[in-house]
Length: 447
Image 1 (cartoon, rainbow, N blue to C red):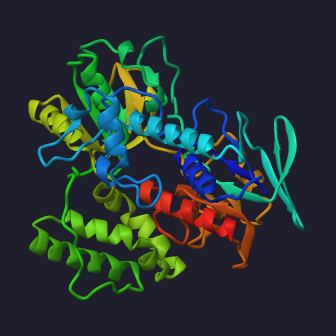
Image 2 (cartoon, helix red, strand yellow):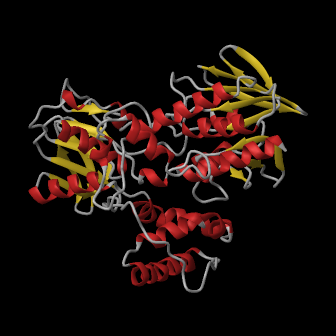
Image 3 (tube, helix red, strand yellow):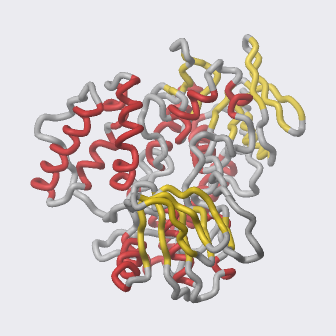
């Protein structure tokens, strides 16, 4: 059996690990990933140790049932691991550490299963075709045929900020990607504008603080909100009336508010309610008609994300301290583009320019996939699924990761997992959810 995995970030590595644990002798796995490291992607790329995981290490499982393994590995491997322990006993380790861990687990499984050939092709899969039973991937080195295909497409790079007027050298300095931002090009007293208010913004602030920056920092985001803080240990919450799936977006929001109040009464914390919703997301999401899902996406997404994707405690403390000192300001506005001297925005008070010596684009991944290294249309042509619909809604997959076509037919040869495969799950971007789907894919292929 020949299996291809398109994408070698965390999702691709997770499914490769599950396959290696399950496949019979003589199988072959090809991973299409241009980066040198497998298991990292953007989220867990090599980087500074002040870029932290936003979930406690003891909750992370590469494969189902492996909770705690990562914590033990980190405490044994890194001499300073204990310094990332919070008051409640939970560890929030650097994100790069998890990427290293994933790569080492994959390497171990490859050594333990030498009869299964694993090939890392440092190429971009450019197109996929399916004619009858013939499944073919086209890449720089040519065309190759496979029996099974797993789309583990990672996040697409950040769309660049518009430059509205010609900018002279250093007026301002613009970093179009927060992940490629070098804080050492910033003078200590420079005024910095960060476009985007989510977790990537917190990483930029951490990098500035680490290099001794002492100037003003202005964060600009459309909703003017930033993520709440997480905690390591939370009690389990189950609503009194159990899991009842509302049929409209309005009903679901009202139900979530009621559950939040119950969670506050039971657990003295609203976060267990959010955890309950996340774990049961696929049931709640599938109960909604398509038009209600769209309404939820348009009106509630940003509010949900600041509760769901929370900051690690150290990052939250850092930003709160900067805000209290007057060095950090968060504005609600729409960024129109970069101009000489700063950033032009449209706020409630009208159009204005926020002055800046440095502008950092931390606006998040391109969910339209227009910045992806390969055309989504070419990768999806085998399925007949519209790339526009797939970019907006994501691919639909069943609980074993099999792609569901536009006519509700299930593709027996094509699987998908990760954020791109969220259409009928609502949320497929978390480590444990991806690990669970990866295990399901491996079991289905083996069967």
